[in-house]
Image 1 (cartoon, one colour):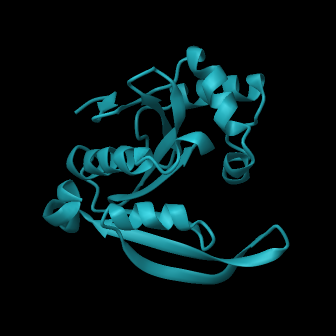
Image 2 (cartoon, helix red, strand yellow):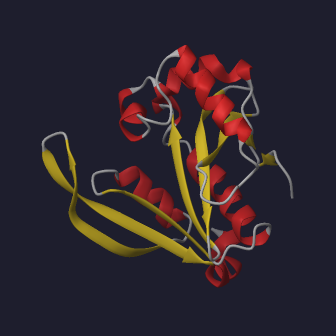
Length: 184
């Protein structure tokens, strides 16, 4: 398996400069900017630097936040990003962000399923986890649709917008993925 990863509706691939307008569009949205403030400054120059940084990494280089463009095949539009951080020994952390207008259509689940399959089967990861704030119910649902199991709740561990929020951690092991992952 190599990049790009192709699903029924999506291509998960490295960024090009042609993606700058699309990335700027979703990175500028408040709900995306809130979770990616340092990684993608919502300016054309910030997006250009982000693309340069992402393209300087080897795919899934250890301890790097390696992110792929989530491209809709029907129109070539980049609708979000999907990342996987590989750590030793055999650990991975997955995350995603989509533009508001593309949420609720199964794109994040479809993309994450393909990347988890790649992580377990091509990269040989033993465990992949994801985490989110307790108020991000949409991400919880994606993790659960992927067959991930809630492993922990870190109570009042994030202070955001004047309130304390829990951090919720979900995970899956390679053996569990082989049993259920491709069928979820």
